Image 1: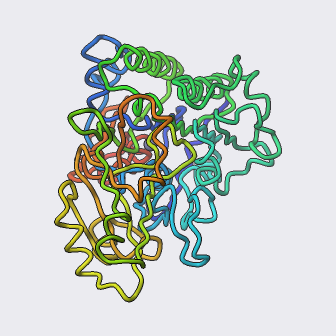
Image 2: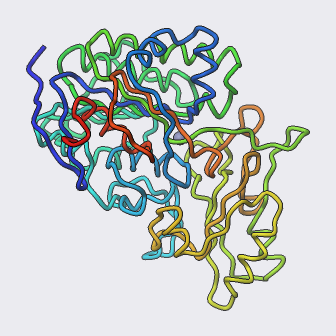
Length: 418
Ligand SMILES: [Zn+2]
């Protein structure tokens, strides 16, 4: 294998000192501890079981709202949304007044660990299942020169060396681009990372999966266990390649249904309009192109109010709704949820373990859901696993999922050195 750079680097005021081994950081999208515990219990993750026996396992807090773009951005930068500026998958851009996807790197307000690692001499590969993440996560990577790679499995066939650092991904992985609504959309990410490391093309990888399977299946379903076994096989290969393997998740997942199995939705804009009249706009920051996952229903929304409406009165009304767990004003959301105040509305609302917040019934297409609604976004999906193949001695009282690159790079340092 070609020599691996051990140059230290810094990103967003944090230092990273990677060892001379390939590093693979995995974001197991939507994978809360119950998925991992169940799969281990069922004997379907022997490699992971062995890995954490000799390594490290903990639970960490993710970033809120517990959505994909928010957390992936935090993970690759090492800082919370307050600093990344990525407050959702979707937001109301105050500069244009338009509701837009937050999937462009122009919205990212700080540099990434990946770009810093690349600049320090590491061979970086960023592979994501979801195309919506590719642009954000590949900010400042030298893709055009082929010194780094960034592509999604959703659009693997469209990867070109000029724009993605590499073409012919299907040939590289050895099978055609997977369907986005499949378990293979994730396993393909891991297989791509394995081939890149095996061939000495990459030694610093961020591999971000999709939560299609978690949205569609609970931990004990056979399809889910097969999927977890697939992840485990890939982890086994990465360990065989002498990688430092570190894995976390962007968020967990819960059923969001009533006793009869129907979605348990508070249509907040409908209710507020009925109570207070016009001048209310509810934004669902979970909104993304993957409607079959969640129908744009999650456990966090933000509310934009016209000046004529009394914020305290509206907040009090929302706070009294059954299923709502927190209502914060803009400053409260900045302080308590670490959100960028200029990229959220006047109020921020979180809901309970089995409750989602929506806009109006006509804004949510649930016809494409795969089974009963499972979703995320609030406090009940905030806790995520932290899994590292190496023993980590440094004690951290408030571990965050965006500390995962720190653990992967600095595990060998004593706390004073790190
Ligand atoms: Zn996710």
